[in-house]
Image (cartoon, rainbow, N blue to C red; front, side, top):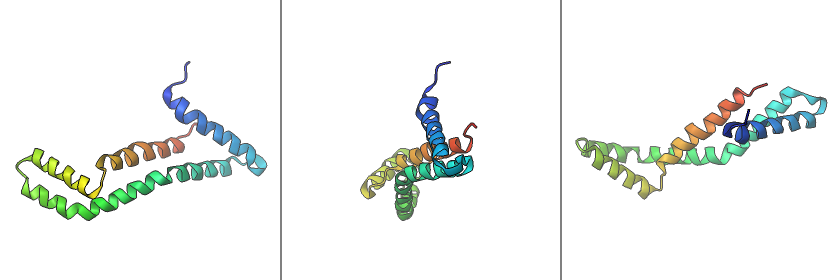
Length: 118
């Protein structure tokens, strides 16, 4: 069976890191190695998480403006979306970044670690 993309990109490197950590931890303690691997992955994802938190804060900051736009353009959804995107550009917010980072990448990686095959 040929390894797929998920196996090649995620599973094999993380599994190899776990094997290395097991051999590096005194007494070959698997529990400590898994904790260290989890911390390593969380530290690796920290810059992405920070950017997501900053984006969330900016979105909370402009929420009243967005609500005003929704009220003003409640009959024209296309104009409402265009004005909202202009507002995001004005404040330097990348709305798609929040979705891609937090939902697709970070959570899927952490769920993968939770369900890591043993």
